[in-house]
Amino acid sequence: MAELDPQAEALLETVDAMGLPPTYGLSVESARDRLEELFAGGEGEAVDRLEEFAIGGPGEPIPTRLYAPAGRGHPLIVFLHGGGWVLGGLESYDGVCRALSNVADCAVLSVDYRLAPEHPFPAAVEDAYAAVEWADRHADRINCDPDQIAIAGDSAGGNLAAAVSLMARDRGGPEIAHQSLLYPAVASPAVHDFPSHEENAEGYLLEGASIEWFLERYVPNPVDHRNAYFAPLLARDLSGLPPATVLTAGFDPLRDEGREYADRLESVGVPVEHHEYEGMIHGFVSLLDQLDAARDGIETVGEGLREALES
Image (tube, rainbow, N blue to C red; front, side, top):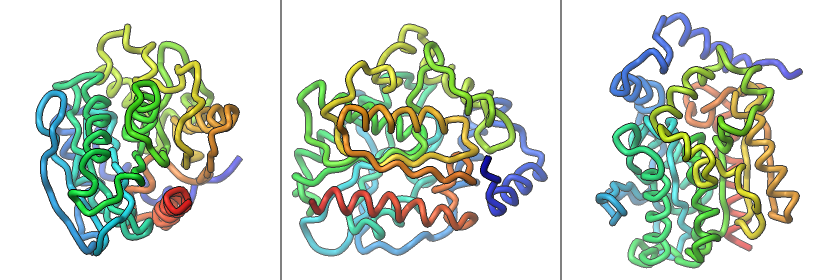
């Protein structure tokens, strides 16, 4: 068995020494504030163009932030942040989006989709789908190439990216050139049970009890636990989906469901690049200032996007 990366171990020791309560012991507002403290902050990398604007959504206007290289005709990545569908936003993933835009030489549209519990499933996934539709129709207005649109997301955002890829296929929607799924949450508690759920349930930043806390707020209706747009692993057919880059982490409770999703995509002929960071923890790519592997993860995702969008 792989060993925990020394930098990840030091980070976990620091978090533990702070004596902070786990996510499941916090109010929603306090949990949101803590994620901002952990992931936000710092200036991040410079980008040539930064714009903020709202796009039309199914419920209300959706705030977005665009990161783009200079010039015209760049590919466009629709980015969906993590945070268990309850936490996170434009600020908490600003550093990731800046780095991804630079590494992939693409524009990145970060989407501030509606959060639970105020807006439970399917609000987030419908907002995410609306953002891809908007990108398909209006890419040229933001100096991007409408024929080169990809989608990316981490954790809950990886869930949304996978679900939107399914939706676009099922609804005859926009053509998505590539999907980048960073340690995605793709399983349903009503159906799936993987060894990593138990092996990594405590002590590795994302804990099993916190996953339950997120799910109670995002999918309060048990009927939705069997909806493939909530849990893409439930989809009977994964053929015809965009090529994928899938990142998993060895000390992540979501590790095995990400592996399974990559395997199932590959089994039906979808081109897949699966990269497992054996010594890493959930959310590592967001920790660019603390973990060397975060930069490597960004470069791996960026390389997959460049190859897909250049072909």
